[in-house]
Length: 363
Image 1 (cartoon, helix red, strand yellow):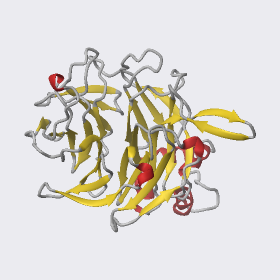
Image 2: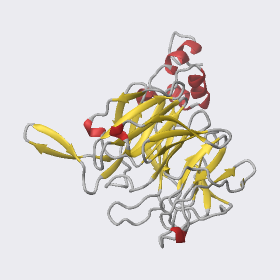
Image 3: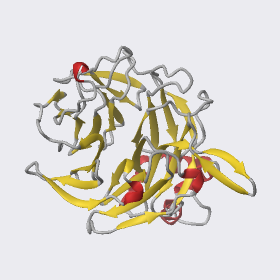
Image 4: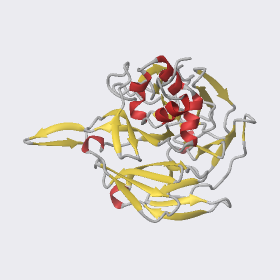
């Protein structure tokens, strides 16, 4: 049997490979067939995680700041019609990197698309065509190990926009979609799940209510669809939620009065501790307790309070926003154990564009 590294026992060789940073995975995979098989093995990544060697990554759909030259200085300025790209941020190292564009989308990511992390892959779903603003049913999957894109099965009709979307965290490699509105601006209560491994969509039972511009999160193993509004309510966000139990394959009862009145569903996120966090329009971050009440935990720094994007992993909460409309993005991370001080992360000018969507994964 061929050794992973000639002259070394496989357990020592494997320990060496476990310590390779994810940025080098593509290079390591190309060395030999054995290394490629090792890095693609689920057991390798389980061992990497159990050994404390896996690291969180944040994937963002981000506007590419328009470049202009004003004399010797190079400046980045907001574009009237920005092109969006997929960006990876490592909270551990503070590094930012742009991922390769989707080959069949020369003008960037679809506007208002959703992003979900499934294992070591990122799934881009829906959105609007940047040129025509027509709703897209496209699905694109990026593999972080091979640094390659593939096209997924199209989202079933009707073409929808501003839907709830979240990936199951239990390893079954499914992305759940619910609500939104169709091309006639009718709010929807239909739902479905995309099986990434099978490249197939499966319909879910309908929700009890229409929910346009709702938010999807996974909490304690169930898919929660937060807020939204009905066709006739146009922009009047409700405060209720519905939760889908994938094991029982059914929706639970509607839970009323979950959100506080000033909270936009887009500013909600599932924490790594299994609790729901939300940011108010005034920048107050609160956590929902087991009894249903909200408790304030922090204030978002002033230079990140406009159009903030909240993300969470393990015991950390990240916010990325600006101090004014069209302003450069600031990034802060809060340790949920202490919940007292935000740590400001350096954001290079080329990564200071608006962030409408994001997700977290661990590699």
